[in-house]
Length: 261
Image (cartoon, rainbow, N blue to C red; front, side, top):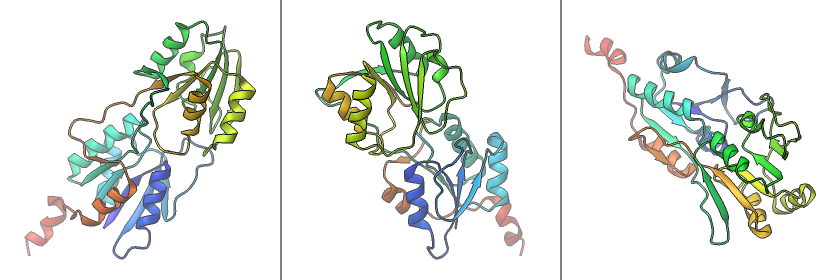
């Protein structure tokens, strides 16, 4: 059994650790290579893109992959689409591991946005929101670059390469963020609004509680939908169970020599 684990998330690292060392199971974790100093999983790791669907298909064939797990970030829409297509083309069983999204509580003041560009439009429509805490990662900051009358605090692991609003402070930090540190950040920056993606999980959820405590609005960029009929689970345990109980499907090209003998 050879599992290709498309990773980069904490769940991917947990799954790699759970499968590592199991008899008959080889795990290769693949990282996109977009973070300068990524947190590495245990076991074999490759870094960098595959070169689109065709490149991923070739990698699956050349390395005799029997199971493909997409445990990338819920917003890695292109990679998920490529994984679904390559798995179907190569008859490799696929499972998407995406942590459950956050849901608003009664006291939350959430404003839904379909995309990062839509979130920027929401901010533009509210001139009373003068100080903005942006926690969407380093990609997509350019959508806010034209808002030169606001003050932005941008928190991400690596500094953004995109154009940024002229009045921007960048905090290059990696989670998890605890409640006390988030309270200190909100108090220090005195932000009027939080902009975040609905990433789910506990590593960065404290900011939502602090926004709730302070009565602040939260502009939430919703997740892109999975391709139709794509199987998914929300926990590492369920994904581990799927890997261990799903029988590998060998394509015809692998059986041809056996069929002739």
